[in-house]
Image (cartoon, rainbow, N blue to C red; front, top):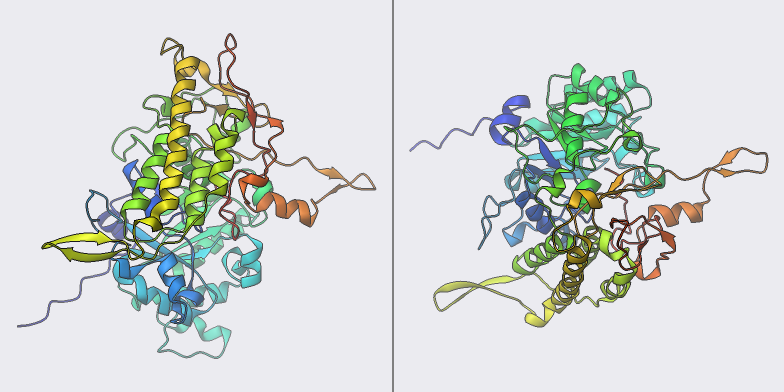
Length: 526
């Protein structure tokens, strides 16, 4: 009997349509944040394609780093990249695994390890953080086009000694059974950005994601993404393009598609703060559209008029989302990093935890003691498969503790909602207020919603010139640290009717102090 012929690897739009299913709504790769449990949550609320966290190819390829592999893509658990997951209707497909690398050998070795468990492998060319500068990867490879091309087209069977013949090697995607994609940041110059994108296409990338911010736009200086850059890239290449940037509310999605012409919209921080961002949307139906006037280059959320909020049609409450996430963490075999869990809770619950009535619960979340469980084993008991925790049920105490705290958040929020709406007599739309700092709408605090960092006020130097923030200030603003150290003495406008006062409306200090997890890399996307 003849062995079956190998399946043809699809490319470009064939791959986009037939393998990925023409996704429009995409969750970005995020360090310590787009782990399996969170991917499952976002898929339940409309995400059509999800990326893994950024994984170091060097660490993943090193067999001595078993814990690193287990933490970032736990193949042995049998759940990462699975088409179906036990005891649920969840799936972890379609899935793209992202690596950061500057070594073609390590990149290819790592990609070979995961190719059977994903639909594509993505190269991170967009990380702008200092750790990427030190590690020489991400956006700090922007000026090394030969190296990027080599990583995309590298074959270990071909040796090269000069820059000129690097491009003569076989393409990387010929060494894998799945396509290669790439995510990158723009250059200030549109023409250079377009040439960069075209180089990636020539190198073999089958999909490119264009984040419309420069390498310098990060942390408190994130600012707005340029849709003009993304649109120019889309017009210049013949492969699918995903747009990344400026997605806060559901109404922003169609605006992004219209202004860029992109094939899909990728969201990072928008989804982190509201995992139900894509809820109720579909590729075949008309998407929510913004009532604001679009701009051709730098769409500004601060200049929009009050828009319809589709989030209020079938509102997802922050406590419900947080409890659903914890239930996923609790049920699956794949271990979830405690820092990821804490980070997600602070982000999802941010609208509530910023209010003084919830400060005690915020502190409780920050102080939960974590005993990291090992992977669950599947053993047969009485002829049936059952999940048995190697260290016993007590290893899940920390997750259950989080759940009890969130349940108390839920009780208080339900009481707040009852009072604020006068038992439903006041419509949610009437409770929407505008943030004086950003000009963005603030939804009632029990409803999932985005968070946008206002641009910092320049500090005048000795000669009257603006100067950059000090390294101490920059570190404080870019790194997310434990919420128990936060100061909440800057008022955040509340979402309550003028005729009724509720518990104090003190918010966070706007410097990221609500988050406890991402001590390594700031996401920096909207």
